[in-house]
Length: 457
Image (cartoon, rainbow, N blue to C red):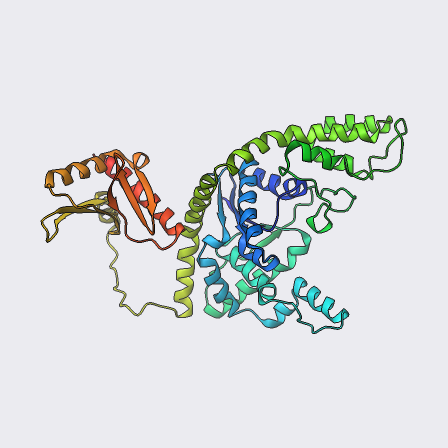
């Protein structure tokens, strides 16, 4: 049985060594565990709370996605997506907002810290506090509950938000009389390293003491490592490894044997300058292959976009049915009559399902031209063909589409439609799909239908 684990990455900056060691690397390793159902997302809605610089948000979304992929994340083994591509998250946030108490939100650490700072400065308690900051815990709850995540890896400063998500989920379940939500658990990984920065404090953009992961290449990495603060002990004097930022960073990348050898060299009087060069070479050995993959990904932003949109399709396949159920639960129901479906014998149902497959339907327009539609198993229209003057020409195209399979299909986005091309010519188009995620999902459904037709040949 798999445990669903969900992690969000705020898109407000460029990843550094501390991000990689403390969050990216362990998450990627966890995603390879067959017992883990990993959900990793770009928390770009959350980023808007912290930054009003559109260029920074845009660049960070791309850089962080490329970093995770370059670090070894396999999107086939994890659901990797952008928060803003999941339309169900803001809708769920509103449903959760309507059962969340203001008193609980008043106690959120980030909001209280802002109020305390204003009070100490003699200003209005809510000066500069946005509704986004105030509602941050509810948005985080929606991120988690949309997928009924079992565990959420967080730092200790985020435990309160998981507790709030649990409280909100329990209240919704109680009010509407069903266990709609799994209660998530905070997962604290004590063994994950927290790297010191250049000045010995925790490596953080807030302290401006970070060591870049990819930005600036090997030269920038070396220059930054050479600026790590050390004590005044001269070459030849023993160095204390227990209080050395240099040694702590080295251990995060080295094997136990390498770390032991480096510790002996420091205790034996290795100079700090030489030690920094050793550290650079050890870090660069791990980072260089990833940097090469990162640069290749950044040169192909369309590929990153396709990966994220495919991840959003997977994510929405889970979130959409849940939110639909929740809409029904709170009374946001369709006014259309819902016919009662009589249960059929299992054998008959199975036989019927085997008989169903995607299908073509041909017709003639009033102008005398010939066209056809392609329908999915559930009756959804996937394609409408171009006009053909000759019914044989239309039939030939149908025959090719029915035998080609999904992988061979050339599909392009043209505005809010998809276009299917044969020999460079558009032969059919899809119905309108108003956003990129829906178009990506439509491509998946179309390819599946073409695969099913080819298999039935």
